[in-house]
Length: 450
Image (cartoon, rainbow, N blue to C red; front, side):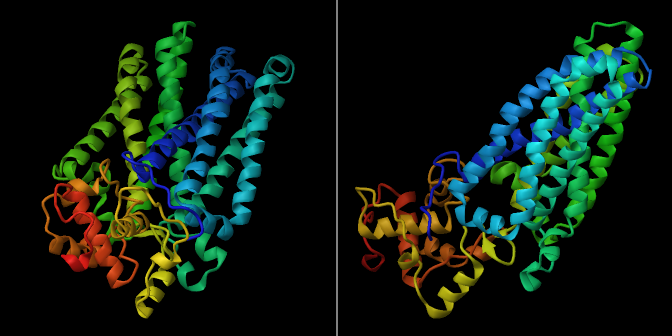
């Protein structure tokens, strides 16, 4: 490996990436696409002569949207690149090489998106009265670029789950226009519009101070958009997951709820059912112009919708199984071809690793075992934190751990096979045993001594 192996202790790599990614999705989709589209729609309604209050609502919310999307949204977007670049340099490097032009065009789309949003905001006061049509054109131009950015990203992320024929043909078309491309793109746009309209519903119910009739009209339109977008989101999610390999999708509850909560099989279906009920109730309250009820329902609905976003992102990442790039690279950044080559030649992984953490206090054998753990297992497992390996192996014998390391790919469809020689596998088993049994006198001994 060319780069050092870095892992986040305690929190774990996956959770670190997920927390940043979920916050970015909520802003880039919910605000930058969803809420911004609603604000442009409201301003357009004023231009069409439907009432000045539409533009007043839009102008009041535009400032916070600009600040949040261009600060937190941009920082979390860069944060995804920074975190994945540090934790998965081989994987992100492969994605950049494979999709160089889509990434380059997406960067241009993002830059254009920010510029148009700032122009729309700073020219509002000048254009709203004299040239509202030009202002509306700027707004819809921004929406179009924001949606095109989601279009470009969807193909790349869809490839990471369902590459279709790319592992064999390795053409751009087979990689980018994969089976989950269209449903994921529509899901992202509809989901963003759902989140944005829900935020607008909450603001209108709680904060709008204009005439009651104007508020009711805003509630009714926003509620209709929210309900329609939510239904499209649900339909797209169904189509999207119907195209995910069934082998991996069968473990979606484990993926979301972790091994402990997955023992409660009705927990996630109950959560999803409650979320759907709250979404429907909130939309109906808005359609029937029940301001107080709509305001009260918006709070739990927002929380539940954030949970749905987290659930989707978690499933999307987890159900890829043992792969980072299916047909090419395992989740631990070890290419499948390298794994097969080492296995066929009975060669070890350690000589190919250019970076090994030489912490003091470990024997040479356990130092090697720790390096093998970082390379093979560290992407999903921490030592003591989330998905900690110490707790999972506590009380197991060395023979049992040794057997587990030899069949990891058979234990669950999302676990990677061990890469390395037979002697290295014994070193890993010895390290895991000493890690799970720190009081054992065997700590620091080689596998042969056992």
